[in-house]
Image 1 (tube, rainbow, N blue to C red):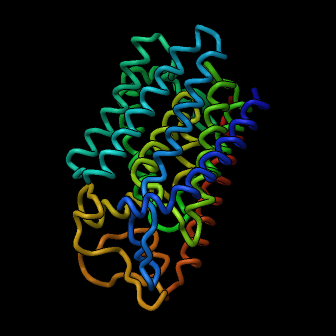
Image 2 (cartoon, one colour):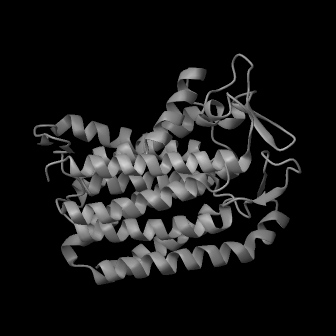
Length: 338
């Protein structure tokens, strides 16, 4: 299965990057583009690259269906169904612009689907005994754990979505974290379908890297909500099904901190088009913290509060934070009795 995982990573990365490279101009001509506001020239950049990455994942999972044992097909059905739901949610958001009061309950509903479908398919998708550092498995989580599953997917999907602000930052973080979880789930070996979860994680790392190739500075393609929401939900699915709940949460601490800063400063969950001010200002190629009262907070706001930074400098700091989160997650993993 490890060989299959490496093949999945390689081919998914290649297919996604090549397709997006050749269709970028078509997307712009059709009007599917965003403006890169962090650059002085404010260039038009093709958007919704997540459509291609999601289609590659869906196709790969559909093919996998014919190569796994019958008893594992219910597990794949749950993963594929929920991933497809978040892909459609992101696509609708890209095309119609969902408000937060609709988007947040919808992302919670996707987590409810995990619980319901896992029961209907008898998929053994999760185990309500999450392992913690030092103490090991926490028993009798039962109903509390089931309630936390929808919350977890709502958090990861929206955290990924809010982190996708600067060229390549989300795609880089997704690649690193999916690869890390893909290895750690095999080392732990406590999930019902460890090998299959690892394969899914490598596949998702591959499409994330394919996105990174065209989304890195200077971006040729934006992921769009289709990409960020589906990848975020998939990360939550890997965390739950791989029994790496705590480890995976530590790995995305920068994303969680970014989301918390935004929420605490505004006082509610919001979409970018629902706020009048941005966390930062751009002047002659330099990014600086927005000093105005009422401006949302973010990691970028903190990074640029001492002095203005170029976009490249901001991106470098985001990526270093990603690597720091990953390192802490690995330490957490080895502090956990498996």
